[in-house]
Length: 221
Image 1 (tube, helix red, strand yellow):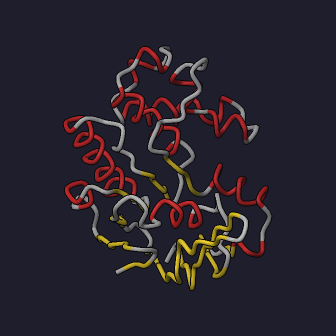
Image 2: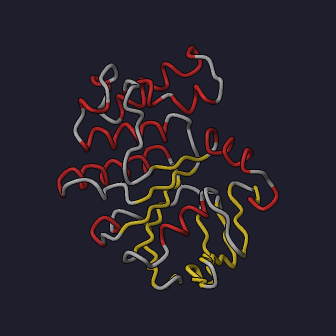
């Protein structure tokens, strides 16, 4: 098991008004598993994903990822884990526009103060695996939406993570490019053995996962 969440609750308060978005969720992910969390907008799935990835903190409950309880470590330590042990892919690629494709891919390694000699070959191999090796010297604006998302996935994959969290990775893509990204994610899960935790509103895209969990009104079905 790479992820274990217990009793996750999340309450947002605005003045005297409070909203319990997550109502007590237990959720586990096994090593190498591909899990899709499906739900409509407002179901709480994005909030849950951000808590599972340590980007947000729960009001109640615990998240243990790769043997570390987020309640026992600092945000700085979680950020360090995100650069080394797990990755996060946003719905919109979040690429840095003034960096080349290559520079975007290796950004987490640069932030981790690694030398280029340690990662250059790995970055080139990942780009080739994802079919974007011919675009390494280009800038994000010169790429299609599907290519930009491949760069974001390459950036997530280049650190050899054990888990990748994905927030609607096809949400900004058309049907054909969305299908290509999903086929790519399934291949990554199979070839690399990386555990994937993806949220989506698309039942068709959820079918690429090995397990589908439905979310409604702050609870998993």
